[in-house]
Length: 108
Length: 117
Image 1 (cartoon, rainbow over the protein chains, first blue to last red):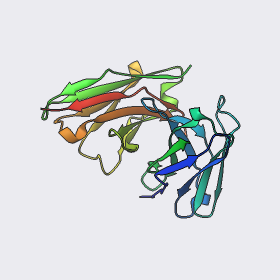
Image 2: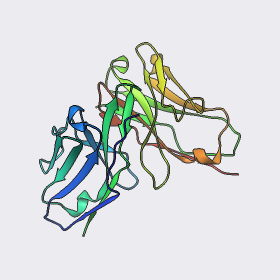
Image 3: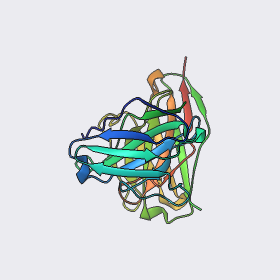
C-alpha cells in the first residue's frame, strides 16, 4: 500500500506562511488532496489535484507537488487556521484513498 | 446541497453488535462512491472501505476486511457500517464520505461509537 509521510506538527507566527509537506514515492505523478480538520469537526477539502480549491476556500490555501514531496502552503496565516491537516492520494492498486498521518498546525 | 447525515452516538458493550447509517441527499446516489473512515480519539484518519451504489461493489481496506460489513440500500440512499461483535478497540468516531473520482468531496458529521464494559 502507498505510504504518505507528514511531519507531526508545524508552528508558524500569525501573518507568516505555513508549509506542510507530504512525502510519497514519486508523489508528483499522483493527484494530491489536502483536508483541514478542526477539533470536533469533520474534515473539509481545502485543496485538490495539487493546487485547485473548492469554492469557499480562501486563495491563501495553495498546493504544489514535485518529485517525492507535495506541499500545502497557507499564506498570511490566521489563528483560525489552527487545525490538523491531512494529505491524501488514491491507491489504484488497492482501489481506495490513502491518508497521510496528519500534521497539527499551531499558530503561535 | 449535498448532505451526508449519520446516525447518532452509540454506547455498547464488548461482544454486542451494531449497525450505523449514513443517509445521502442532494446528489444522484448512484453517481458517487461512499466510503467509511475511522478516527480513534487523538489519532489520524483510517480508510475502512468503499461501496459503489450503482452495482453494490464493496472493497475493504485490508486492515478492516473481516472486521466490519459495509452495505448500501439504494432505495433510501443510505449506506451502513456494521459490526457483529464489538471490541473496546472499536471505540472511535466513524465518518462516511463521498466523492466521484479520487477525492473526498463531502463528509458526514461522524458517529461516535464507545465500546466499554
